[in-house]
Length: 111
Length: 115
Image (tube, rainbow over the protein chains, first blue to last red):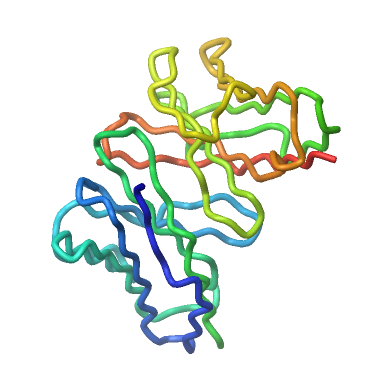
């Protein structure tokens, strides 16, 4: 069974701090990794994706992937109250055309 | 900016009734998906669709569910005889290709309530 695990939180950080969100996955065949943001009652919104080991930066967001440890993370620099949401990690395995989602981590950024 | 659109935004139906959820994927996308999210739970994959046929489906997608692309723009999910446990948010998504290096974009969802 392919599983994607995230700490449900809430993760509380002060405004301006770095928020670190973590995700582990069980399927070693996983190839692509996506971070989505979901506000309450809304649909998942893609933030960024990563395929290769290492870091990938996009504005205030950095995704980090370590395939050997089956671990992917998202760093949010200069966190803003508007970043308060649930962050979903999703994993794509090329053997199947679908995303497997983690349960999400709820982030709260306090002014 | 192109987006995936879903109708209706909220559907209330009686147990045992049939419902059809509608989606218009992004126009140049070739792969279409349905996911669902029961309140407070994970987003779960239901089905993927390419070239007018199902390419992948989960255990959730049993004989009560079907998908169709009736014309060049719409993509529908039908639930034949709804159960209370079908109450969830249903998301349609689309992507340009089925490979993992392509982002899937989600519609705003249809909240289905079965009473």
